[in-house]
Structures are given as C-alpha cells and as structure tokens.
Length: 142
Image 1: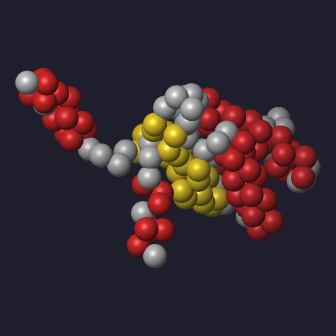
Image 2 (image 1 turned 30 degrees about the horizontal axis):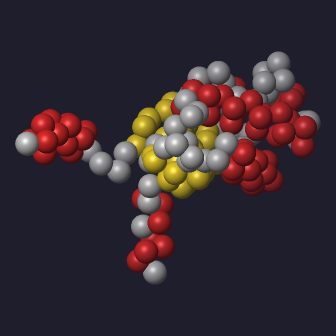
C-alpha cells in the first residue's frame, strides 16, 4: 500500500533519458466564462487525460473547474512545457467544441481557451539539494 502512494515519485525512463519533469498548468476559457460545468466538465477531464496519454505524460492531478483548468503531470523531456500546454489546449478545444457545438456561441469567435496560461515546474528535490550535489562533485572525484 505504501509503495502505491509513492509510485508517482518514481523516476521515469525513455530510451535515452531518465527523468522526473513535473509541470503544473492552469488556463482559462476565453473571458473566464463559466462554461466548464456538468457534462462539459466531465468530457473535458476525459479528453485532457487522453491527450496527456498521447504525449506519454502521466497525469498526477487534473481538475476542471467552471472557469479554469488545473493539470499536474509528469512529461518526458522531449516536449517543452509550452508545447505540452499548447497541444493540450488546441486539441482539447477542437474535441470539446465538436462534442458541444453550442459552446461556440458562448466562446469568443469560436475559441474556447484564452491564449494565456500559467506553468510552473515542480520538482521532487529542492534547488538547494541540486546546488549542493553539483558543488560536491569535485570532492567525489578525489
């Protein structure tokens, strides 16, 4: 049981890299309208999970609120944070507006999401630990 709760902290691997790249994203619908409710919110959550899977990202937390979205995911280092959020927003908007065409009238010019977003990197070690590790490398050589 305890191992399961810490599973998300495990290092990930690609063919040529070991990584733990955590990103927290937040974005809003155009004009911060409360359009992400009920079935739209459920569908949005499912769509975002599917897109993250396409990108080989592991969602750690994903919340769809009426006027904004939070995504916390581990993603491979081959994708930049900007690429990930723009891919999430672009592909999800197309799918959501196809499924709920009535949102086009509530969205500005057929756009679901605002152009802006927030992103923060999230680490499982502190900057102080990394700094100390790098500084002590010469000591280990001797």
